[in-house]
Amino acid sequence: MSQINKDDYNLSKPITSTAGLRQGLTSYGDAHFSLFLRKVFIKALGYSEDALSRPIIGIINTHSALNPCHANVPQLIEAVKRGVQLSGGLAIDFPTISLHESFISPTSMFLRNLMSMDTEEMIKAQPLDACVMIGGCDKTVPAQLMGGISANKPVLPLVTGPMMPGSHRGTRLGACTDCRSNWAAYRAGSIDMEDIGTLNEELAPTSGTCGVMGTASTMACITAALGLMPLRGASAPAVSSTRLRIAEETGANAVSIAASKRTPQEMLTEESFLNAIIVLQAIGGSTNATVHLMAIINRHPKVQGKITLKTFDEVGRKVPLLVDLKPSGDNYMTDFHNAGGMLALLHMLKYLLHLSAMTITGQTLGEVLDASPFKTFPFSSTIIRPLSNPLYPASSLAVLYGNLAPNGAVIKASASKYRHLLSHRGPAVVFANSADLAHGIDDPGLAVTKDSVLVLQGIGPIGNPGMPEAGLIPIPRKLAAAGVQDMLRLSDGRISGTAGGTIVVNISPEAVVPKSFLGIVRDGDIIRLDLKTRTLELEVGREEIEKRNTERTIAGVWEERKTKRGYRGLYERSVNQAEDGADFDFLSCKGL
Ligand code: FES
Image (cartoon, rainbow, N blue to C red; front, top):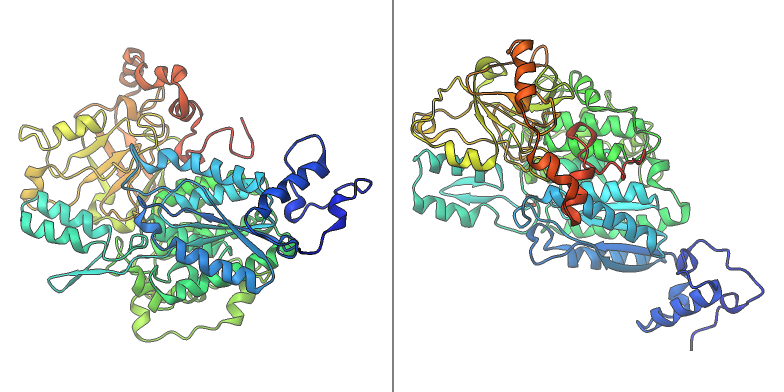
């Protein structure tokens, strides 16, 4: 029998410890009994008193057979445990929900807030001194950061890492920019069914997250820029031995952060988030990151209100795009990793960064960079460019305002295929929702030219719960067949971080909100985008707008949401708009 911890049974000595098994006792009205019972049950798993006296490091297990981006989670857990146990802690894994982009209906974003609640409540409710959060696929890392910051116990994100690129007829490929471009080529008739079928087997050749600068890679780089994980943790491939060593290091870091009790709300400051936005702009990251970062920021009581959507634009004007990865450039995450990854990038950006921001190890970002000098290799300067030779001069992501988007809209200007469209006036071709789009876009009789502006309404946070990634409106087939590859497209939904084109998304307020200008656009209305002045305008007279607003009956989703049951009802009643992060109003640090 292992040695008894007499303090646990001494009824005249109150249980005051807030660490290990003694924290957060279940409410039975008798703290000693609660601890006694907890120990009864954990001993069923074979733990000794010695093991139970160690700092307890939780590991969030998001493995799921329906999540190939997380296929390596079991190996990562094993490696984290090794790191914890070598450092004197006790590692215990537990599950939360897992979300994969392609397996969740209507869209994984619909469940991001649920996952954040699951993460927050499980970290708070269980006796953990620190917690390693393993995520990877697009919505999982934002959900874990949101939940982890709200739980405010020491947390350490660990991402699963990007997949390797594949190959088709001598050309490298990777999910998911190439999924979209090849599908567009198939729609246009430039590749045949046999080709598209073969490509289908090559686009995701290993487990791991999408291998371009999509949302998952963007959030991984942002997490490293926030100082929450080792820099090479952002880009080491999912199937590499480096990924396992990062997991082991994360386990060791967890034990030391448990001792220091450093919480994310203490560690992360306004400067940490400004660094994240600088990196977002320099990598040409996903437009989704603006939504996720605003949701994360609004969970932090000391940063909330100091950074808004406008900040992304202000910061972007000073930051060039340096990383040549798809969809803005040509390469893959493995190239970024081999070129030095985040360490090389942060050295390039050093004079723009806030170097006093803290990192998970207790060093400042400046100390981390000073301790790891980086020498640029000739080959790497084509993947991670120097400030003197950027891929795009500034503002890869820009925020637009105007009567169509009084609360903001976002465009990834660097991913525009036809740059002249960044300053464009054209007549609207309007689709009321995704079903209308699917029905009408390839109609041979559709009155559309290459100068039209395609508008998709009704896919905002409330209009199509979860704000699906349907903003990449396909080029009408008759135009695609004539060689048109890009048009100005607008919506209140999102686009995948892997998508390219002249696409304005996250328009707020969304179309279903009463008096939203997006909700009253009609076919033929002239729409003007001017990137230079950050303007998005509907050129319709005030009288006509008022007339349309009076005629408009706001029924449908807007009214029905008040009586809907279950999670969907909660979602539609509580979700806020894109510029606030599409979080539930009651989850932000301001509460309702
Ligand atoms: Fe998981 Fe792209 S589908 S990261």
